[in-house]
Length: 631
Image (tube, rainbow, N blue to C red):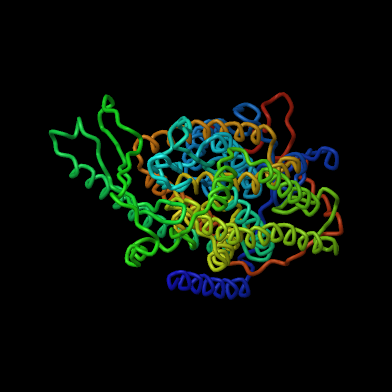
């Protein structure tokens, strides 16, 4: 935190110096003018001058070398002003394909990579680059969702009845159960009379329904802040936050890697060279087993064999020789266990067991319809409000501007809509956790134990992550992913959950950008499809490798690397723009700036370089010196 505050103070000092520089002269003002095709108002030359090509209707892309606005075509070296755009598109598609697979496997959208590359590599302006990024994020997250929604949790709960036959014990219905977590197999083992298996989806729907609306609320505030802050300032703040996040994620990766190496060394030492190929590796794990009227500590032996020919039972259990009644269990045994793993009431009667089994069955549903429906309702409401309000440089579809009182109403409705969902699940999750504890629900070691203290903390951090997402135009996964890792959520669960949340935040904004015309539809469809396929292929192979090797720390390392590249890209954009502006640090912007008068048309002289040529490739040799730029 001290490093964070030092970075913020440094940024404030830069901002103060920038105000002084701006006050001393007109260094921040620019006289750059671009030639916009406008034969209707300028019939002589066919061109008019504009200060930015986003003001040129139908020709929103900028050819900086020729000071020209043009309508960009995908994979076209003839109609674009330079063949370099063809090569940029080809290289961009390849990089987008690879980045989508890596980013989706790590549970992030990749906006921190797409936005800088869209500006630096594809030569888009910032707003179209942000729109193309949202279309790419939507495609990648949708491809990942198709895989995630069918995948299962890395661990399966196994409940085995280990009580002797009733006629031999005379317990009249009482018995013992061994509860353990076993690695999830491709096909869930078939239940038997004495053994039941309960798995879950890899997506934590409860966590997503709580955190996703809170992230959306933060993004709404982030967009509002972005309109006031100068570009260099909000990008610098985002770079500082992303840099600190990358450092924290790398630390977590190193910690996880050391644990994995220690476990691997322990497994190798446990097997002698002579017996490693023929004997199973026995790893004792203590679990608490439920008895009607008592609790029995048992030892589970996890059988793992290096040789494919070796066969052993999935989980052999060795019970204690004699059953211990509840009053015979020492308190020292309870203190050795984690507090969250203890059941509040050790007496498990038939009613509690039935309630526990019901909760396990509910959580085992691969497609919980009511939770998926809540996601759809949340998305539909947010999309509708986004289209009405506009944002991120896109006008409202119903003509509402920031001067209208309805603009503030729509912002308030966005907050109420998102925070309402989050508040409901923030109240519901701790209650569900307490109920599960009371009936002896078998939590996995990496499950989040929701209580009101943790709920408030995670809500606050997620809200801040949403603000960063709104500021820089990313999906928020680069902040939420490390947060879930710090929460000790299983990396496969965290990546799947954040990828699902990103679908909600990116889809509506992507459609808004494309329908506004800021992003050429050819590029939107191409890069959406590229990221969709890249995410599907990349995540499938990366998940398969992690499932075979058990090295989940790879996901954390990839996540930290992606965040680092995003930080570098953001800093490159900041310093590039400042250099173009003669190192002028601009001040705050007006929150609402609407022009009520049509700007006068300034036509290019008929004898100038901006003549509209006929019979040539689009804008070919329009400006002197263009041929020297062609490859």
